[in-house]
Amino acid sequence: MKDEKIPVLVTAIGGGSYGGQILKAIRLAKGERYYIVGADTNPNCPQFDLVDKRVLLPFASDPSYLDKLLAVCTQHHIRAIFHGCDPELKLFALKREAIEHQSIFLPVNPWSVIQTCMNKEETSRRLRELGFDPPRFIRVTSKEELKKIDWFPVVVKPSIGSGGSANAFIAQNTRELLGLADYLGIETVAEHFLVQEYVGVPDDEYTVGVLHDMDGNYVNAIAVKRLLSGQLNIRMTVPNRTERHDLGPKLVISSGISHGYVGRFPEVTTPCKAIAKALGVKGPVNIQCRLIAGKVKVFEINPRFSGTTSIRAMVGYNEPDILLRRHVLHDRSIQPDFEYNEALILRNLIEIPVKKDEQYTMSDL
Image 1 (cartoon, one colour):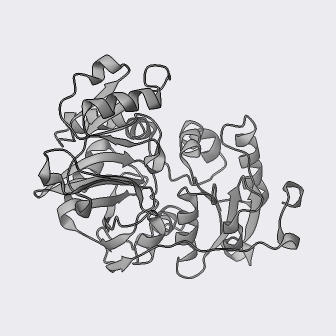
Image 2 (cartoon, helix red, strand yellow):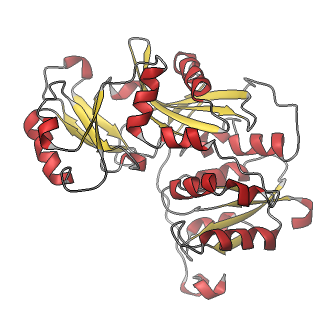
Image 3 (cartoon, rainbow, N blue to C red):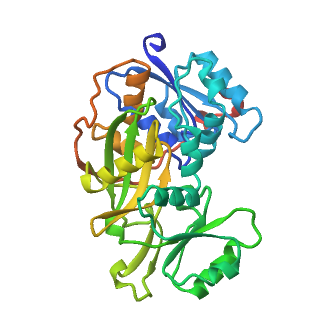
């Protein structure tokens, strides 16, 4: 029954973001201790089948969003909220006081960490200041700046946003780089673009999770050695036409959908633990990197739960459950670097038919 379980709200559970992964991880928690309220903007969200109560919320940009969110929390006696997309992450961080005033647990990093990590230029600059040697980078706003770059191949992407590698492209020479400038409208759009050195080979790419509790205490770390082999997990791939034979025959940008070998991988988790500590993380953080000659090169950091949250939970590394147990249930039995399994976990697409008489409308929910 609802009264016997902890009411938890997970937002943005549909689409391709990480809310659905958090939802699946909470469902994998032992003991069925949570009553899950799932929210999305889509009335026919397939993930509604995995929750105990369906609710609709507007987009985070809607002026009424916070009031409607808090109304849902009051109605369902919510004890914890997990955001499922980046716009909600920013909003929750800025409105933390209003949310926590209702005695709601909010596993969101400090605003300073979010500000740094959600800006790729600031992330790279901060890593360099801390001595972690990120790939070479430069922020550009004009084609004249691009003409000075002679360290190809490079990745061009927006400095802010572009989750799941959206709008990220590879350029192997000046001609391609200038063509991308025209295509992306670098000189006409307001956002800044980052040109980042392309490093390493696809076989040595990792997504690394480092978890601290909300008091800043280290809990554990895990990595997925990514298998980049299909359209589901590759954003783009092009033949390597440069003289950089050390980069392999193909240059690859991964998508936001990761799968592969899940385990401790100390060669990457150990340096990533140091990075998370230096950044002052409180909560989850996800670090994208490649391992080159035994050295980690970080090209992106997401200050939140990962798109691999559910497959981590499948091997016994359940980040949402750990934080709920520690901060809501006050369970102090969770030890740093607790044991978990290792496995090869693969993903694929599934089809979910929605019968006409089972479709929802906004007025039904």
